[in-house]
Image 1 (cartoon, helix red, strand yellow):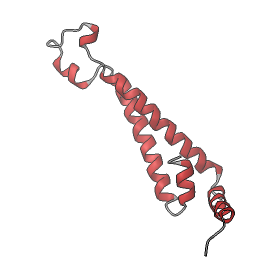
Image 2 (image 1 turned 90 degrees about the horizontal axis):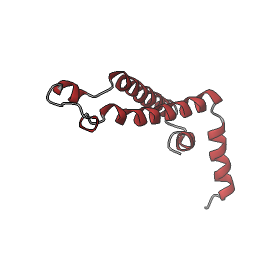
Image 3 (image 1 turned 60 degrees about the horizontal axis):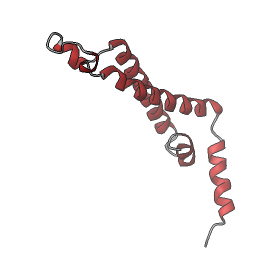
Image 4 (image 1 turned 90 degrees about the vertical axis):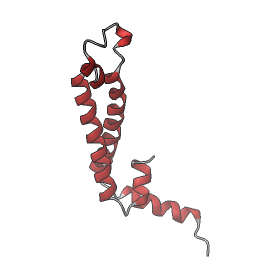
Length: 105
């Protein structure tokens, strides 16, 4: 017995629309803050050779990264985004339509 496509779409839409706005906003915020962390992170490890600094004089500094506050900010952004997405994934693990629309789509 085949289920009509319109019934399947209505069912998926109703599952996805029953979620309050605050959870949709949390999903959007978590995704964007994770993206911001990934955009900021490479800037903390720019090569010191490119700016003409003697690498032998500051070997620890060279290996750790150039911009420690930016590294902390990028780490906080990534951790916040991942924590939010994991929390939402666990909270709505039975609502596959909402997960696909808001976390993976």
